[in-house]
Amino acid sequence: MPEARRLFWHVLSIGSVSRDEPERHAGLDKAGLFLFRVVAGTGRLEMRGDQYRLTRGQNCWLVDLHHPRIYLPDDGKTLRTEGVRFSGPGSRDLAGIAGCRSSLQPWAGADAPAVGPLAAPGPASAPRSMNGKCIPN
Image 1 (cartoon, rainbow, N blue to C red):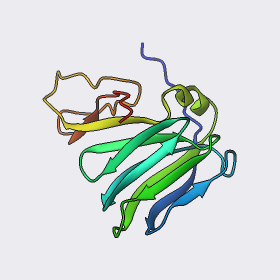
Image 2: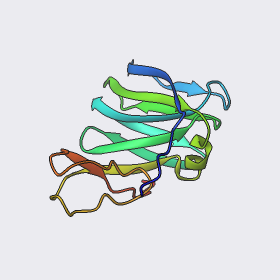
Image 3: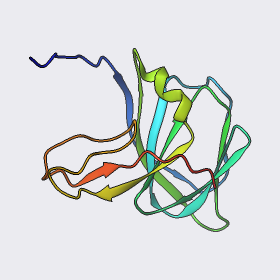
């Protein structure tokens, strides 16, 4: 018999942000983790000694907000992101993959597994799943 599980994560904010100049954040300025994607523009995210290229497309990033970070829009461009900030029991377990980029891939069918810790399980009609790759760039 399947076992029911509960996930008590708290959504702290949902929305979009436009940046036309560098945006610096000290560590621990906000609670939780931030999962986002780029909806317009290009730029970089600098965090924990790594740089991540931010571009529009099928990528999303998970950021542990306990660490200092800088969002750097490319010169003359506005970088617009949208995402969700969340926290709760067990969400810190994801902190080990924070800063990772994952690609959203088309769902390949009913028996295609969603791979990785951020995989989005669902029926065959689900439009996307995340592959969970960690790729600093």
